[in-house]
Image (cartoon, rainbow, N blue to C red; front, side, top):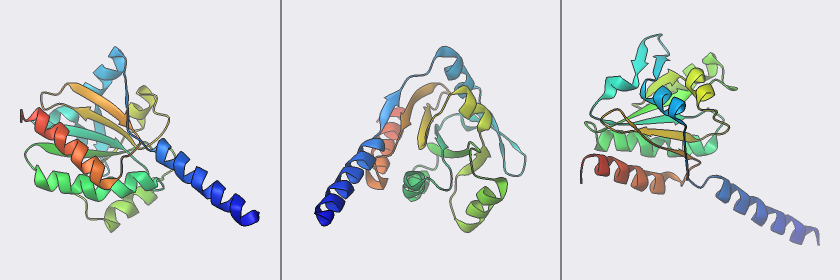
Length: 172
């Protein structure tokens, strides 16, 4: 009986996790869209980083923290997308600072070879009223808001879906 309970519990937990990380589109109000389009961050060296700095590229503003397994699982795919589309795509890896300290984030950055622009993002996270991560905001190459997504599809499906977004923004 206990084995059956453990098996059923594990099955339901797996289904709940799978459902929790499915990508879903969310809508933003006009003020939030304006905040995204005018977003300015600070990188971990204190330099300003603006969404507008990446005109001509699809910008993915990816809110993450070091404890977020789905966030970390897709990072290699995001890095590969930057390598595959160097003139068309950039990832702003945004730490909202909910639980990760500066030391923890810096250690993560030092231990991983990702080409992302790592930035602080508590101000935008607050404006967008983000309640969970992964949380992704897409900005078109012309600097206008495209869409938001919560959750993760898993590395390969994220890669495929984001590739399609980039290609559509290139007019393919």
